[in-house]
Image (cartoon, rainbow, N blue to C red; front, side, top):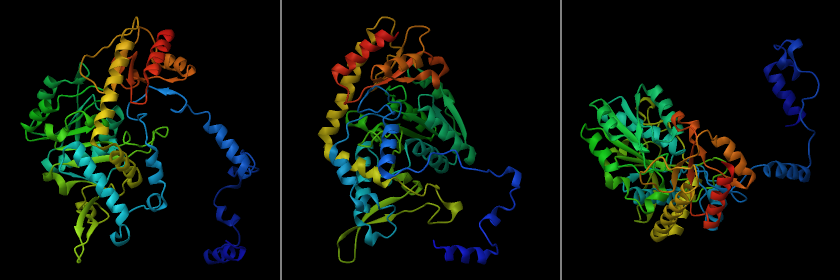
Length: 443
C-alpha cells in the first residue's frame, strides 16, 4: 500500500490521519511506548530461534511413546509425505468446480471407498474435521432419522468426544444419558435398562477409551429392539484384524483417521471419517464424491447429495459442517493403498501382540495390577501401587526418555492411580522392556 492509497482511504471515510481512528479511546488508557516484544530478527536468526524453541518439545522421534488416548505414534510410510507435498494436492481446498478438480475428487472418492471397505458400511463421506465431531454429527443424524431426542453414550467413549457430543446436543435440544461401565466395557445390564422408545441411538466406542473391545453384536440387539440406531466409533487400525462394525449391526460408523499415516503433530490436526448404511445416506453430513460418466462415456467424479447449509436452505440442512480434511484424507488413502489388505492385517497383529507382551511385562512388576480382564487391542489399563501419583511417575519417565501413559484420574475420578498404556507397531521389545524397568524404578 502506498502513501497515496492510504490518504485516499482516509479521505473516503472523512478522517485526516490514522490517529483519528482511535479518538474514541480515552487518552489516559492508551498504551504509550514500545510493546514488550523482542526486536525484529533476520531470517537466519529467526530460524535458529524457532529451532531452539521446537527442540524443547518432547517428540516421538527422540522419546519412546506409550501415550495414546486418541493420538497414536504409528509408522508413517515415507511415500505419504512425498504425495501430499505435491502442490496440486496441498493447495487444493475444495473441489467446487469438478471440471478442474478431477484429481482431488478422485482422491476423495478413493478415501470413501477405503473407509467403506474397512467399516463394512455402504456409504462414506469425504471426511470430517475429526473423530469427536464425527461422533457428535452421528448423534444428530440418529435423532433426525428416528425423530427421538435421547442419546445413550457409554462412559467408555473418549471423554473429550463425550464433551463434544454434549455441546452439539445442547444446541439441538437432545438429552444425553451416560451409561456406566463394568470391567472396562459398557455395562450391558445398565444399557438394557436405559434403552427406551425415546432412545434415538446408543453411542459406543470399540476398541473403547480403555482399549477394550465392546460386544457390539449384543449392544446392537439391545438398541435395535427399540428401533434405535447403533453408532460405533472405532480405531481404523484395529479393523485389520477385528470384524467390521457394519457386519455386527452398526448403523453409523465413525472414527479418527489419524492412525492411518497422519502425524501426531503434538495433537493435531486429524481427519474424521463417517460411514452409514444405505438407509441414512441422504442424511449424512459433509460432502460425498460420486463417480459418473460424461456425455462421451468417460469416467468422472462430482460432488453429489449435498445436503449442507451452503447448498440448500439453512433450516433444511443436515449439518453445518461445511468443509473437510481433504489433504489428511489423502494421507489416509495413500497409507491404505501402500499397506493393502495384508499390510493392514499385519500391522493390526503387531499392535495386538506387542501390547499383550507389554501388559504381561508390566503386570509382573510388584505392586502393578491389571484392573480389567476384557479383551483389548493396542491399549490397556494398569493400576499403580496405592498412593502413587501418575503425574509424578510420568515426570520421572520423561527424564528417562519415555513418554508414559495417560493419567486416567484426569477424566475418571474412580480411576485415580491408573495409567492407560498404548503400544503400537513402532515400539520394539527393547523399548517395552526399558519402559517396564524404568516404571519399576519410579514406583
